Length: 248
Ligand code: PEP
Image 1: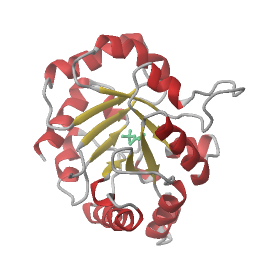
Image 2: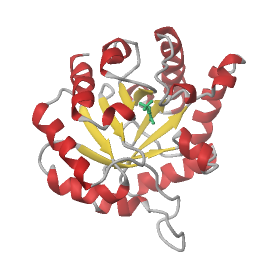
Image 3: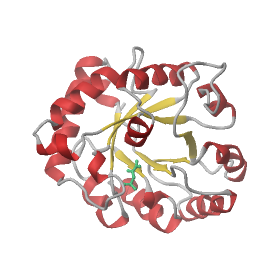
């Protein structure tokens, strides 16, 4: 099995019911894409969206889940609750959650374990800050984050890794193709040592992916797709990214 190509949209805290029309437009424009397409809207939109796009092949995901299956955790969501309303994936350890909510890699691993128990694919995000890159620490930071964030029981079927340099998210800046290639090669080699099917784990790049740079990024070895923020909100932007990945 080769890694499955995945175009994943992270809507973050954007969008209301009115925005669901964008996903319908995406499905109409790309009825049979040559890659998996995933939208991770705010959790309150997963259920209405699943009803609106039923049978269209677009997958839905959450942006976080709790490590526990249920209980007294006001404001949190359990992985099984996401699955119950139609999610197949959940983004975990996004740098905004690591920064805003103090999430450590160990917490991310616990959440990923919970996601797996609920039958969700965990999209585990890793990435260096600008200061860490400037200090020449990128590969060490990524290796350490992977080692601590990957739970026992991870497989190519239940885990996706997203490399998202913190300084590239929402900034319009992207690493060079060599910089992306270097990190993805490290991830592929490291996963090959850790998991029996590590060669098949999908590796996403994320950070200011847009229609104009998507094809170049998807041509980089071991880049099997993208995690896309801002450019996933509009079908007119996300559609060309899906098309570029389908053609890669
Ligand atoms: C993200 O938040 O995962 C992301 C990659 O954002 P953007 O595409 O807007 O940089």
